[in-house]
Length: 317
Ligand code: CP
Ligand code: NVA
Image (cartoon, rainbow, N blue to C red; front, side, top):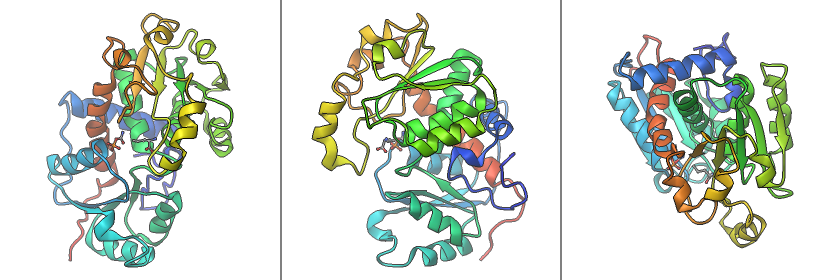
C-alpha cells in the first residue's frame, strides 16, 4: 500500500490524507478484484479490535465479516464496556490493545480520541468515523463511482447538505482522483476551512475544482453524481430542530435529480432519514446505487485491512 508514511511501519488510516493518489487507486482496484473474486486476500491469524462509541450497522459488519472472510479475527467493544477515558486512560487502552491485536479500529465521538489512540499505539489505528472524517466510507464511495462510471477524472460530484464528516472525507478523496467537487449547503453548514485547504493542497490535477453553490438547483446542473447525508449527525441531536429548519430546502427530490445529467448517479452513505434529506423515490430510483455502495463497504474494508495487515509477522502472546 502506498501510504504517505512510507518510512513508518505503521499504516494508520485516520484521514484520507494518509493515502496518496496511487495508494487510493490501488486500494479501489483491489476492492473491485475482491468483489469480482479475481483475488482472495488472506490475513491468516491476524486480529483486529473494534471500538465503538457510537452505533453502527455497515461499518461494524464490514470490519467483522471482512476479518473472518480473510481468516482473521476481530473482537468488538461497545462504549458501555469500554468507557474510554473513564474506566481507563486512553493511552493505557491503546498500549494494552497493541499487545494483543494487529490493528485497532475506532468509531469515536471526538476526533482527538483517535489521535490519542494513535499516539500510544504500536499497531495501525483505523478511523471508523469521527466528528471530522469518515475515510472508510469515502473508499466505498469511490469504488461505487468507479463501478458505475468507469472513471474518476473530470466527473462532477455535487454534495447536497451538511459539510460533515462524510462530505469532508469525500472532498479529500475526490481531490486525489480528480473528481470535481461542489457542495451545496446553507450558510454556516459548508465544509470546514481546514478540509477546503487540505483538499486544494492534495489535489493531483491542476484543473481540479472545489466550489460552493448555495442553491441546490443551480449546483446540480450537469452533475454526474449527487450525494447526500443526514442533516443531523450522531452526537448533534440537540441541534435537530434548528438543522431541520436550516436544511428544509435541501431535500434531494426526484425533481432535483431531473435537473442533473440524464445518467446522474445518486449516492448516500446510509443510514438515511427518508423524507428529510432524500425522498423515498430517489433512493428507490434506477439512478440510485446506495445498496451497491453499502455492499462496497465490505469489499473496500477487506482491501484496506489486507493492505494494512499484509506483513508476515503475527501478534503472539
Ligand atoms: N455508512 C455507515 O458508516 O454506516 P454505519 O453507521 O451503519 O456503520
Ligand atoms: N454523518 C453521519 C454519518 C453516519 C454514517 C454521522 O456522523 O452520524
